[in-house]
Amino acid sequence: MDKYRDIIKAPIITEKSGVINQDGIKYVFKVDHRANKTEIKQAIESIFKVKVKNINTINAKPKKRKVGRYTGMTNKYKKAIVTLAEGNKINI
Image 1 (cartoon, helix red, strand yellow):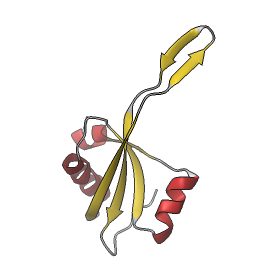
Image 2 (image 1 turned 180 degrees about the horizontal axis):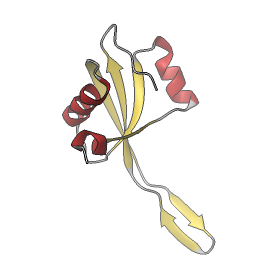
Image 3 (image 1 turned 135 degrees about the vertical axis):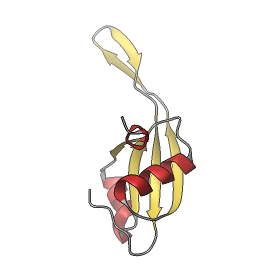
């Protein structure tokens, strides 16, 4: 498996991420919770062939869920809000 593909899990496509992307240069990704900003930047630039200007990260904590009589927690993950340099675009 490619190291960069293990860091970037999936794009987050919600109404809130759509509002963030109104100007067309910010994208939200679900990333591995152990990844730092430098690794995320290298992965985005390598996979999508774009130039990254800035990255903001948010740790999403696990939430309690109940299925029948069993209780558990959801997986923890990290959100990365990626700002691209002028003239770059990602097709999601």
